[in-house]
Picture 1 (cartoon, protein in one colour):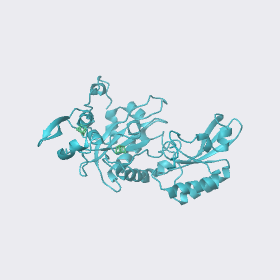
Picture 2 (cartoon, helix red, strand yellow):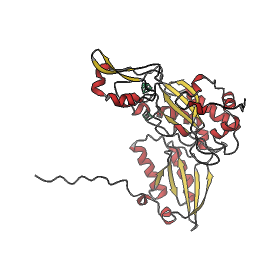
Picture 3 (cartoon, protein in one colour):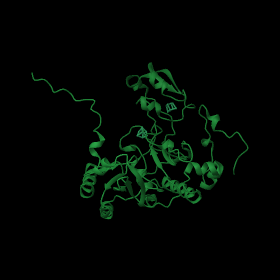
Picture 4 (tube, protein in one colour):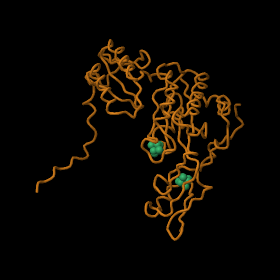
Length: 359
Ligand code: SF4
Ligand code: SF4
């Protein structure tokens, strides 16, 4: 009997240097400065005097192999076969010949890829799987992202905002991605407790893991019709779906009650102010596919009140800190409700403990 070839494993990703354009290899670590020449186009100048031009185009992130081939064709035509993707899933073409910038932009636009996302703009929306591929989603990702970016495209292709504005979306509060730390975050939420399938639970789930998955201790062991199962204390449940993540017999998806919450004021960078978590602005908007018009107009409203009021370079969270949350709710026309008040474990740290309130 012939021997099977040894299995190749633990080989890691390809060495990134193999894919660097020659100009980047030559000037690696020796860049002097960079400038944004116009929306979506920047130049890096090296100590050697070499210039590297970058053209950034938006991409829907979920792309077919045909689209990747199209990007490769453009890279072959304009950039000796080199391209890269950014941490917000934009695609960047790296050129050494400045005269090729405008023809590349024209080619990209002709097939539907807008150029922009640099400087004081709204760049791509970091997002998740939604109804395309994930079992625990309370909303869709690709559909909302397409609707919101269609509406805000002028802010992707232009640079007329006071500062950067980062939007992220996650379709459940596992928060895959960046919703907890974005200027505006769109987050899928459930509003009904799980329906326990007692017949299947013991066959499908580890009960101790299931019980310990609950952040509020709402799940207890129970015998139901002579079968080992669990019961859920519904008054303690806040519909996080963590139990469903570990146990398929506790589904809680509900087409009429699942929907969207919107959060504001998060940031990751240390510029001017330390990093901040996003905080709840709108507790619930119903799912309204395929274009989610209520979500689109809520996001536009937030962008516009911030853009009108913020100082140069002031991020959403910095602006709200300056004017105060009461004034933010007033300016945004958002009703402040009991749902905005933290009631989880160390909630007291978020309560106002002084008379310094700005109305
Ligand atoms: S955020 Fe939730 S629903 Fe969306 S991809 Fe992550 S785990 Fe799945
Ligand atoms: S949905 Fe969340 S809070 Fe409710 S029972 Fe499951 S884990 Fe607990």
